[in-house]
Length: 506
Ligand SMILES: Cc1cc2nc3c(=O)[nH]c(=O)nc-3n(C[C@H](O)[C@H](O)[C@H](O)COP(=O)(O)OP(=O)(O)OC[C@H]3O[C@@H](n4cnc5c(N)ncnc54)[C@H](O)[C@@H]3O)c2cc1C
Ligand code: FES
Ligand code: FES
Image (cartoon, rainbow, N blue to C red; front, side, top):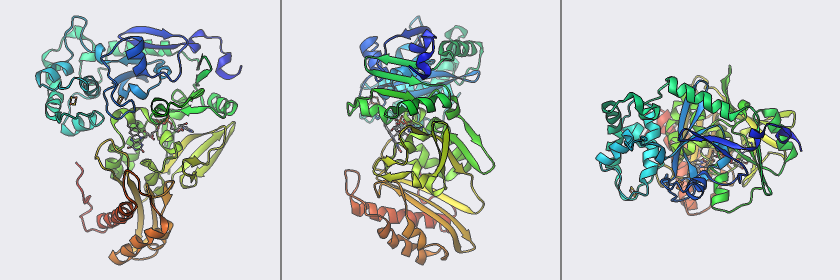
């Protein structure tokens, strides 16, 4: 055996985490068993519900706590698509964890009850857990914070009003019932207190330093800690499935019943979890979650805020990674058009060698990328904004929140006076891969940025793409909307809208 299997530390073959403050150690874990299956079927802890089993409805929402330096970080995730071994070194918090030992309801539960926020009961546990994550992230919340926090919890009985009221009231309930013995979970916002720091240390000790290597029947799971071990493992197991947040891979198991004999989890690899700002670019590790990656991108490119807030839901963004979105190779991934227009480059690692590739050259055909066997994405390099460059990316989907794009268009223009000095345009949803609109760009380059040249470029889009009709949109719709998005970009960057969005999404 090689790599982490050689290690003698028995903890390296056991999944260890905390549940209700107690240590859980699991041997012989099936790597693709989901956290939800473990909770409901193994523990009979059935407060957490299964609705869709694909990360869409939020009925299965739980919260994970893990050390982030000396602080504890809490994040809501969808347990239906989270594989059990990824709990290693974390604290799992479920709806059953919230009430005090004496049965006293948590402020979030009390507020839901008193505001009549609990309706069919099936969605309620997930809603409570999303609100609990919000409660622990901040000491207060406005309407927008509440809407964002609940974007991944579907309620089909049209009952959001009392739930939103409960979210507004939960902080007051906590303040009214402040009792020192209730513990950090009952205090709003990151507590940062002695109890929380002690929990951090406990989790760090539990996690250990060894890479996790599991075998269950024919299935194997590796969670290396450093990039060299990861590179070695991926080279030794070129057919293995690389697992990051599992928000795509999880569905291969729960919906497509695919066999994944070997999983290599990148979520523990320290070097893949960093974000560095260099002189000219943002350097983002492929294992950084979307929640963490999108913050620095939006800090430099505020125009992308709406796009990124509409990327799935907080639980999906808390688990899914930017590297996973890119490597997945979907023609309708939401980050790629924007990243292509920014001139993003990828660092690809294979064994001891690293090569660099422009993101636009990474996609070869439908779900086929330039990744070679034994190779993985290690970093994503996004150029920082240059003066005078305007960028936008617009997502068109049937639902505002938590929906897949029919078309996603991204635009970047640099003007020299009225003249277009540089232009990059890319769309998702119009071809088998995310793709630049070269004919359209040519129709604009060195021309004046005015109505006539933009109308000409809109017509040129027909030479760039031959979209298909599917359940999300017809080819005619896709053609029309892609042209309109370019026109919208023109309006928003030519002074016609005072620099504002033509559509106020807030
Ligand atoms: C409910 C729901 C809503 C969603 N909404 C959106 C949306 O709005 N927009 C959107 O674009 N996507 C959406 N997605 C898709 C998904 O969340 C994203 O594609 C996400 O970024 C995938 O990242 P991940 O870390 O979960 O990848 P994983 O599922 O872990 O992996 C995805 C693929 O990438 C490969 N991979 C992962 N990391 C690497 C690496 N470092 N090197 C090489 N290969 C790697 C895996 O082997 C796999 O093939 C949604 C998914 C769900 C379930
Ligand atoms: S069961 Fe619907 S999101 Fe998990
Ligand atoms: S609370 Fe379940 S459908 Fe509304």
